[in-house]
Image 1: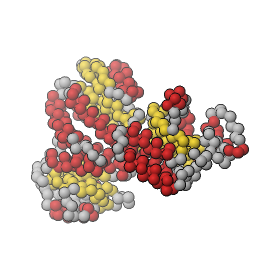
Image 2: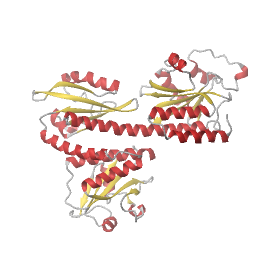
Image 3: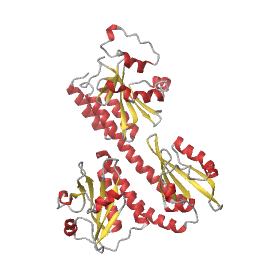
Length: 469
């Protein structure tokens, strides 16, 4: 390997140039090329889906002829990829990497797949051409790509010291991919909202990757003539009439398999026997090539009143979308400012539940710089509006018109405002956050357009916080 000083120089030069690269492929390719310059002859990055199938591979150090002729051969079978990303290889872990040496009999059983296991004695303590060194790239604890490095120039076997630079670049690679996923999510959601405007579709059903319904809006319930409690948490296909399911299944299956928007016109039979023609549009949600859920949009021309409500919401959402530019800190500040400007809110602040679960800590505050955020820290209990929003997982608010204000009195007295609203944020399963804003004037009514926009903004703010928690 090169000397530490040479490695630092390579990193400094190449990582500075990374800023000029545009797009995920270009950034990842630059990191692979940088990694190869630190003492490795071949580097690759394979993106995989939830079935452990290789969907795309980037190479550095491989000839174009090799990639063209052997690209498909380099794709591991899904069963083998699953095995090599499972607990069976944990004994060969070196930090973020796994090193499966050909000289190790147990490792050889995993790598060989029937190949000759004869090892020349002179190579037992050196890198063997069949050695395997790789590191999974994770998103929300699930592998979405695999970084593989091969053929060290000095023929030495890897250890913690020699893997310091690859580990740094692996971490950077993971951060770039996570940021791309977040930005791609924003793009998908904007496309989703845009298509709703274009097609005049109103009923919205959201499912997870297993087909379980996670949410349905009011219009969706009206169109399907089904009770909300019967729909949510049940499988999408099990709550619908069989003939209708047969009509829409091919389009939904295609959307999942191809990760493309599909649509179908189908006849829906209500419990009264009435037949209604509906247009169903499937918006698959995915991170890279991993399907994570579906937004099912139902066109229902008769729902005029709901359309007016939703149209108003979409106008507000488009105003918020224009604020989604820059880095995550800038996006968060712009989106919060857009919320305040639209609804006469002030002193927006974000609370995080402390690790011991005892208090809410103010981690961000805008428009009140003269006070330290510590002033807003308070106990996590039902006497806090923010705590109530987190515990109940719903938007909560109170005003000076209320007979009893269940919130922190000293904060209300200091800010001297008319009310406050608390919006829960969903970062991950462990962390609990809440956005709180104060009201300049009252009365305040949490109608459907406001609720739609507040939840949309909460979703964006949550995505900007994810990389930090």
